[in-house]
Length: 122
View (cartoon, rainbow, N blue to C red):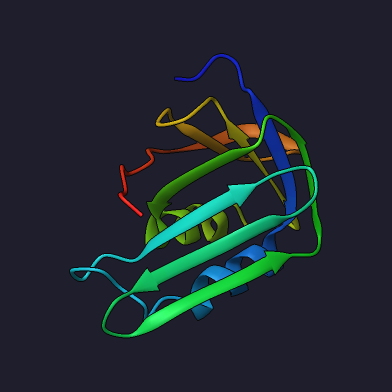
């Protein structure tokens, strides 16, 4: 369990869920990978497949603070975690590069989701 975070993002759950869902058909070896590129200026959700193409969307309803970070994770798992929380805003806390990601409801600490990043070479 991560005990500290280097950066965190408060994002509208409907916006990020819709963004991830729109990229669901872009898969690498049958795995739905998304790349999060987060900075205080803007946050990108990217996907890429050599056979299908790519997607790059900027989250507009997002508050980000902390270190800039870029990591890849399973988009299906991220989407499932966001939907399971069933809240309006989602708090995503990054504990560092290639370290677990905490996904939670900022108003209810009783449920916590943990995602593990995936090493990508892009």
